[in-house]
Image (cartoon, rainbow, N blue to C red; front, side):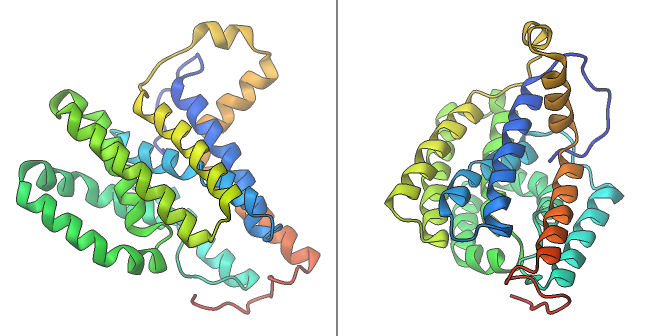
Amino acid sequence: MDTARRHQPIYLTSYDLLKTAAVVFMLVDHLGYYFFTDTLWLRAVGRWCVPIWFFLIGYARSRDLGLHLWLGAAVLVLSDAVIGFPVLPVNILVTILIIRLSIDPLMNLILNSKLFILVFLIITIFILFPTIIIFEYGMLGFLISVVGYLMRNKISININYIRTAFLLNLLFFISMQSFLFRFDLLNIGILTFGTIFVYACLYNFSFREYPAITEKIPAVLRSIIRYMGRNTLYIYIGHILLFSLIGLLLGLERYSLFNWTFT
């Protein structure tokens, strides 16, 4: 979720298309999380957005830590407390802040020291699950961000190193999400095929503008894609607050005013 406010391209871009897809997958995922908890295929489809968000965090040149990101994270923690949801793990915006603060110095160490790579992998194995309990996606988010960082700097990095990182990341993400969500075979299949497609798109991702596509699609659709691709932070915060309010007003079983827990 790139929060930097900069000059916006006139035409639709690869960022717009990728982020719009991520927003759609995210909305499907959160329909399952907030309203249809027994419909696991919604969560399986929703998993497809996760690699996109974290890949773009690592890929971006910006390490924006603006006030709007901090406020958004705080608002969503408060929202969980109000509707009676666990406040841990804290929301993905906190995870994004941590990654933006840490990825550059850590990647410099990883790429400049073979020994540090081994130490990093050992530490990751031991802290992965504790970090997932505290921060949404935890160390898994950082590992996905690593492949984005590698792709941004691929000119100076061995291509075999990048391919290996992508493959291991893909396999790790699928296996871990299948385990955490206890998916059956059908939903593992949905998760697997969709995630493979997403990672293939990420492997070939670069910034592009699409003037031909921009001119050919209807103006309304063009405006929707542009808005969804360039306002992801506000869409993320806004739809969670909306879903939380709807669930509370409907009196759904999971919702209980101010009856929050830590986990």
